[in-house]
Length: 246
Image 1: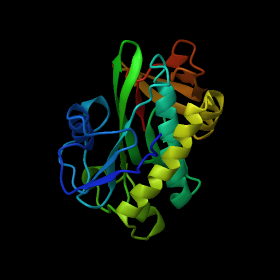
Image 2: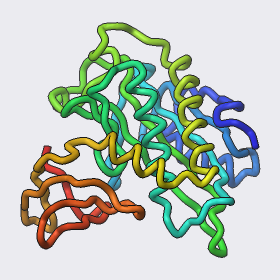
Image 3: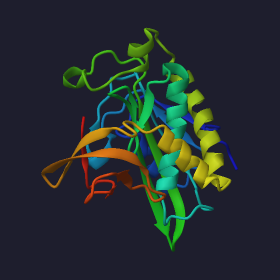
């Protein structure tokens, strides 16, 4: 199996690295492990159809093509968790212990967002054919405009400037380790490590669901990716159905 990042394509400008990767798939030009890094991404994708906004050349904006055919598509959260841990391992290596994973797939440093993940899947005949893993990590960006109090970059944390391409290649190494851990069937270890890395674990957090707010303590994550809390009604929160108020 080809390692993640063995074929590493640098794109000067593209609408979305996930879109580009999918076009390569449809053209028959993509293989497992191929990475597409954009120096400028004009229409990057975020969760809930939000746009991932990044300054050209300042951050990691890349997609990785995988063929997780040996994994079951019935529980895609395990791939989400493994990828989130790979990005977490990478960012913690450079930024230190304040790094954490905000459920389900954002990377935080303290209370500020440092990165995000968007995985788009293709499943046919109950087989997981393709997973395109889109990753954005703030590296050198200094100005986040109206989001400056909620976002942070590696440079902003460390006071150093980094080579974005070299760091993107390093990120692939961290992701490869977690991906192989997933393929080995170490699901319990992945869930344990993910839980230990969770943002606000064992702390009370404000949530909003269908317009109504409530407060609950974060207690972990279920094997299928639900957020576990101590709330008497909302003890398991599904992805996409709830909003953190941070």
